[in-house]
Amino acid sequence: MSRTTITRLANKASQDRAELDQLLDTVHIGHFAIVGADGHPVALPTATVRDGDRVLVHGSTGSKWLRRLATGSPTSLAVTSFDGLVVARSAFESSMRYRSAVLFGQCTAITDPDEKARALDVITDGLIPGRSAEVRASTAKELAAVLVLALPIDEWSLKVSEGWPDDPDDDVAGPDWAGVLPVVQHYGDPVPAPDLRAGIEVPDSVRTLVS
Image (cartoon, rainbow, N blue to C red; front, side):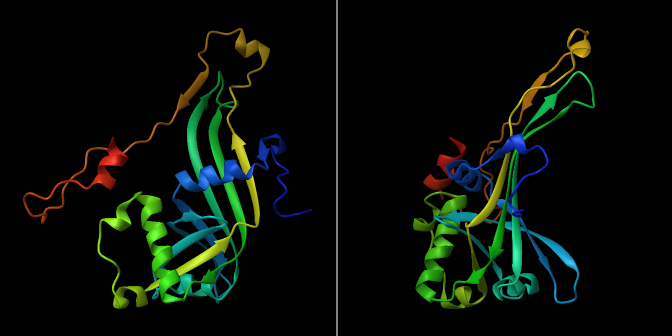
């Protein structure tokens, strides 16, 4: 059996690559699982951004876990969106609406300076669209201090839970409310940094996110 085969609640499994891409394009916190050199497992939470058929991640060259990922150690990446609470007529039947993906594979380090700079721009614009054009380019020193890794989107599983309460008939006939409480996420008003000089306006990239 493939490690991407969903056996628990298999009816929620999805093979839709577009649905996977949509999840990876809207949820930017993922958890890499890896076993360290000492044999102990760790889950590494980090920012993730999809770039075509790969997922990009970056961090300090001083991170021992990123350095281990860069060696090609087997890993998995979990990305989950919590979309709502399914409020059933009993605690037993209550659940969540969610989209959850697990990607398997090996990361490779992006070392070419031009490709590395481009990948960092992709990460920046993945989090704040249009931001890379508003800020200065990274210096050679900054590029040298950053490790950029790519995980191919080759082997993956996706589970989507978007149903309604599945209460037994006796509970449906009872007095308790049932339904779904959707999760709605949005950015609040921009808060300027304490050392921001007077007269500097909120950039277009940030305005777009809060409009």
